[in-house]
Length: 115
Length: 113
Image 1 (cartoon, chains in turn purple, orange):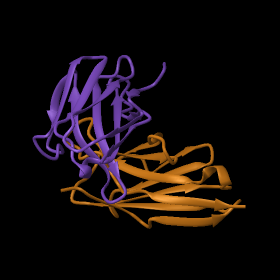
Image 2: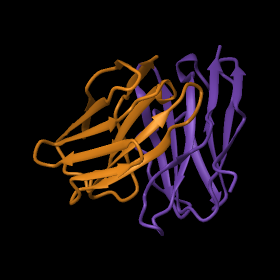
Image 3: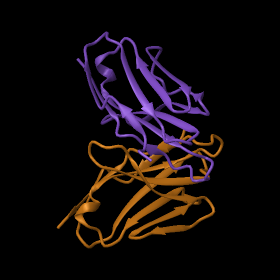
């Protein structure tokens, strides 16, 4: 398996622009997670899905952030409008409860810089 | 809310020694605890999972202990090597929310020759 795939790997944008991050989870995994990592706050969970349904979005910082999972193999995280404080590394991760393992498998991340 | 503390932000040890990293938590009793490794510029990588009814787990040079009374997990790397240098994160569930993990801030380990 190719693992969790994220795109783009790097994104530089100007304040006010819309940013869309994409994720393809590992095939067969039923959980998908979006995290944000910064030096100041560490790894923060933004939202997670189970079987394509959002379960907990309490970590989404504000209404500027939205996430969708239209099918089992694709998810997006959108920031509109973006602000400099959104600069961070955004990770997508997936996991499977089917095996009972519950480990999360992370993608390589998207490094976002908002100018 | 769940609070997770890892003993220090950085740990420096000499090659060949055993590295011991600490993860303490409060407020909840997790059903399991996990350890991840993160290299610069990459996502965390799962290493080990230990369940609440397990005291110890081993994988090659890695050993994890889980003391639910002390609310603490210890992560050991024996015969450490420079290639073990990375940030190590502990993560735990809250018992009631399947699938979701709470991550500590991590400990940056440097193994020098």
